[in-house]
Image 1 (cartoon, rainbow, N blue to C red):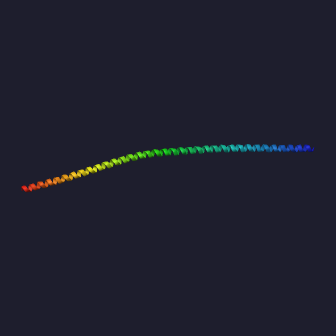
Image 2 (cartoon, helix red, strand yellow):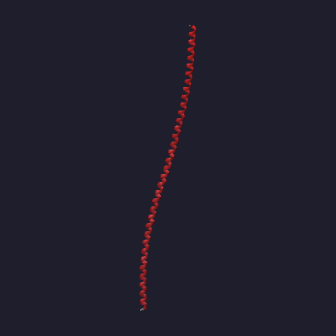
Image 3 (cartoon, helix red, strand yellow):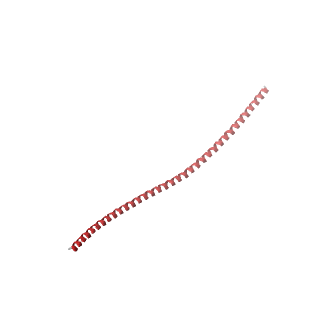
Length: 128
């Protein structure tokens, strides 16, 4: 009878342990499922972050290319303007020399005309 009681007690203990083991296995399965969900969410976030990073890197690359192209265009435009300014200075200097030459010729002509007039007046006064 004692053996039966002990066997019965052991059978109860085994049943209790099986229930606990089953419960722990269910808990482990739930934890594993939750872990898989978290790992999946982390992977999704990582992919999202990588995509965002790639987009930013592409945008930065595009901006650098655009900035480089604009710099080249601005350098070209600057050289054009420098050439135009040089041409303008050259033409302005030429005009100034021309005006100076014309002024000198006018002065020479006026001086010669004045001398001619005086000479004519002197000749007219001498005749009279």
